[in-house]
Image (cartoon, rainbow, N blue to C red; front, side, top):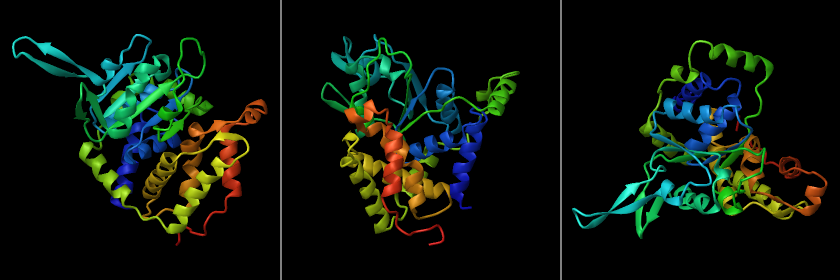
Length: 316
């Protein structure tokens, strides 16, 4: 086990103190952060979405802000705004809530489309432009957004252009029986978040991000990733396939999985493990698929079965 794998394991272990029975979700969120991506978590209330984000902010000792997105939230609340100072006779910039390392956007689908669009630049460019001036965001920078799929009253679906900016979309789901028993026990005396200790910092994350970005990928893996994306663009059940941004996201997070597994090169299993989480929210189903109740996840699984994987194993 190399030092980078040890660092990843130590972070996961800390977050697991507060988020019980969701090891795979924890690993995927961490890898998205380490691959400079953003995370969308869609699930019902009360399954630990916010706890997950707060646990990561503690374990990584990152500056974090949380905003509850409601219909009255304005774009300037997120990005910041300029105010006139009478004493200096100049306009001064006041930072919005998005200026931090880890921004938790709670119930993002309950705010207006105008406010949602304020996140587009900061998610893609890691910067914010106000009154013609561009301000760089702190590094590392990650958005973890949550939305509740139950109850559509007063909600605004995220546009495809914004969904495409999330590296992965996850669903935590209900805990299993023993997991829920453990949750009850952990809440008996104290808040589980208080047990989470900082085992990394911004410099650690930046170092891991740099290492992951340089992981080796064989040309056959590049071709395999592109073949998977191309298959979505020609699938009869899909009206819109994967964009080049989605292809790039799959490549980036596949590198992170390789590092988490202790390798310095990517194999096909790394790609297929995370493919559905990267692809599903980017696909637009055809009318035929909707009528037959076909899901994006099942289409991705079908594509993985049909696209031949290159013969590259963990043994070389």
